[in-house]
Amino acid sequence: MARPMKRRKVCCLPESNRFGPLDSPVDEKYRVIMTVDEYETIRLIDLESFTQKECAIQMNVARSTVQGIYIEARKKLAEALVNGKVLLIEGGEYRLCDGLGNGCGRGCHRHRHGRSLKDD
Image (cartoon, rainbow, N blue to C red; front, side, top):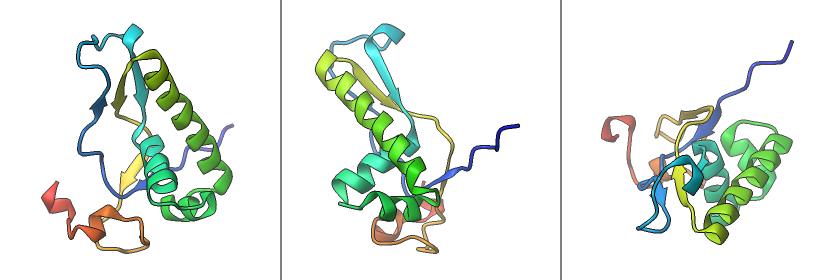
């Protein structure tokens, strides 16, 4: 029996969850769906300059898990950019951090911006 999927810790949801050509329809043929945890790996590794190991610690998962999530996220970004598709960020197996910095490091947007769950 497979082990249940561990929820990945995410520090913030994206401010915008839809990107792409303004004139494109959002039907299945013209969209790519990126999960919130995939978005978080892109944010931490590419924007915050985390290593995969640091990202894994921040998200409370194994480094190999982060590597797999990151590879899928980059494929989806490439698909949206190269083929002019709408990128939607939604769903996935994640849990939001408490915003208090408990177990969060330098990449926590909730802690950095002084936000808490009450603000969402």
